[in-house]
Amino acid sequence: MSGTSPYYAFNRADIAQHIPEWATRVLDVGCASGAFGGLLKSLGVSEVIGIEVEPDVCAAAQDVLDCAICGDIETMDLPFEGGYFDCIVFGDVLEHLKNPGEVLKRVAPFLGPDGEVLASIPNVRFYDVIRALGDGRWEYQDAGILDRTHLRFFTAVEMQKLFADAGYEVVKLLPLSRAVGIPRNPDGTVTAGKVTIGPLDEAEYQDLLTYQYLIVGRKPL
Image (tube, rainbow, N blue to C red; front, side, top):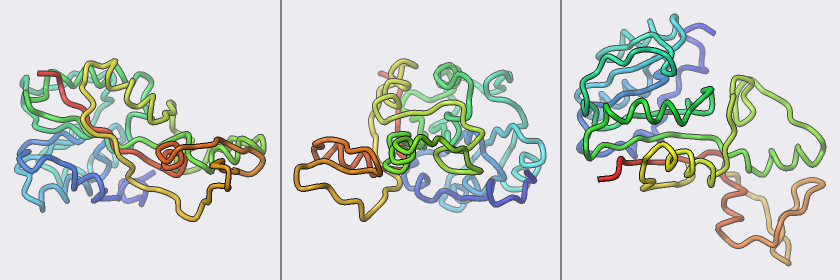
């Protein structure tokens, strides 16, 4: 895809509202064409540095961010001072990596003592995925939970474990997007095509409706 493809152009305002108000230096891993970082700049973040693996897309980001580095976050040398960033963002990135836990460990030294790591991650326990599985289908798509470039799949429980195993304290886990209009049966179960799940308590029901989560981690003090 080119750097102008809509796939790389989302500004992710839903994530931007969770950047700490005091953050002045942000690392955007998987910065795409820079739309998200450009939004952060407009909101008052002093410095946004991006990392992007696709050369054409990275070139587009260089026109928007303070600096955009072309490279693979899993293998590249990271040219930053220790503790340089107030916030490190993985917007729809960790599910594309071979070893996302190792990447979370790699970036930890570059996070300030009060800094946070934010990640948006799709929820593979989403209602429509379960419904498709009930029909015997697991169909990759150009985008979404079953994006054909995804290498890892996570539930909310496994997202928290990913961060904890990488040495972070999980301080926030909340839905970024949810489905609507999916009823519970009178007995508390939910029917997803040929699959009936439950009975579910309210938290389990809301998890089933959640398309994508935001998770925030902090290095233990």
